[in-house]
Length: 239
Image 1 (cartoon, helix red, strand yellow):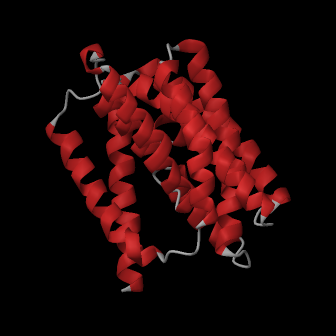
Image 2: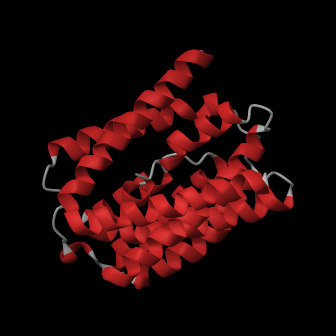
């Protein structure tokens, strides 16, 4: 799932906290980043070998993401989840409606959208805003990246997923460096998770490339709805 449209943290983080309840929340985030970077980098290589990447956008966005995700990770735990969760739920609901009412979005590329201004905005949104979110919170980052590249520069879902994996690799690396420096990574546990993540990434990337943008769109909607349900449940529990 994560290799196709992101959202792997939606499943992995809760599972990690259930399987290892003794972990500090920041350690769970750091351990998740160790596993995630192996999966996202594997998927990025698989996509890069078989589809065209707009490196003029993906490259600068990844470089910016490396820094911004690290800054987000440095703030992890300082901001309570209840402060931002309703906003994220609202954004996800809007995304679900937007994708539903525009069934053709992301099915074909729209090169006319790739103006200099739009490319710059895509770099800022993906490499800055979304990357900082990934370091600070995490789940749903890949999904937000796919949507950013699809809506802002007219990529189809397959090419949007390819660029998303490149930027997501950088966000995971930036956050992982910060978590590791502060001792918040369970290395042995993370290594075992990483092996499974690599296998899943290879399968997911191949499925997306083989089945095309229509398949990715369906998975995207499923992941967005699952994110809404999960975050809504957590907010209801804590309210």
